[in-house]
Amino acid sequence: MNEKAIRERRDSCLFAHLDVYQLTLACVVRRLFFPEALYPDRNEAKKLCGDMLSALIRAKKLRSHKFPSGENYYTRADRRAANTQAIDYDLATLWLCMEQKRFHRLTTPELRRLFPTPPHHHVRHCLTQEEGGPVVYRLYFSSVDVKSTVLQAKKHLSESRNKYGLRNWIECGDYGFIVCSESERKSQEVADALQRSAAGSGASHDQARFLVATVPTSATFKMPEGG
Image 1 (cartoon, one colour):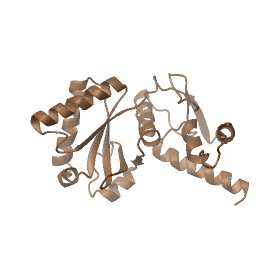
Image 2 (cartoon, helix red, strand yellow):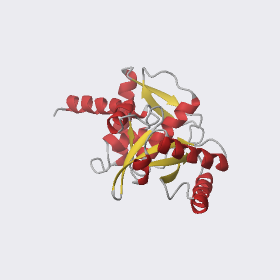
Image 3 (cartoon, one colour):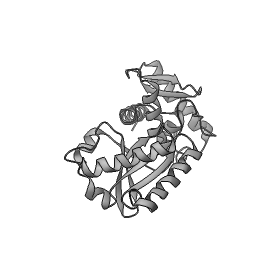
């Protein structure tokens, strides 16, 4: 495959990535297309990544933006302007899937193939491989206090079991919930509260998979060291 074909293939894959995650970061693009295993010289990888992004911006296929934190992010040039909440959700989803445990965000067509009646089709889901097999997780981005977060998480559990017919999926451990929080402290408090709730009433951990993840917001995001 010649250099032009490789470049076009990379561009196509980047747009497919943006179709799923809506926005991306230079550190993610570098990891996806210029991995350390193939590009051990990180300065070279950063330059190639920067050249790729710059070329697409010049071609008006990609647009560069700044988070309130001052860091850059990238979207398709034709993406409609999004509000802060949508950008925060996009960033959190990308971070969860790319920087922490390896998750794959499920698109609505993918959800429809999994479930006859897609649960919360307007709500984000992701897929990962857990011990024992693949698990689908519903994402919940908490912007309220710990008590309200736990109550909302339990409401999501009840709705999923009773309204969306996922009782068997949940009881088999094939469907769970990820609570996303903006700080390590809040994440720990939410995890502790869910654990206490499970011990006291049997309403959460013993009936469903619950994970708690700390994710950045557009106001707090800083590029990782070396990013």
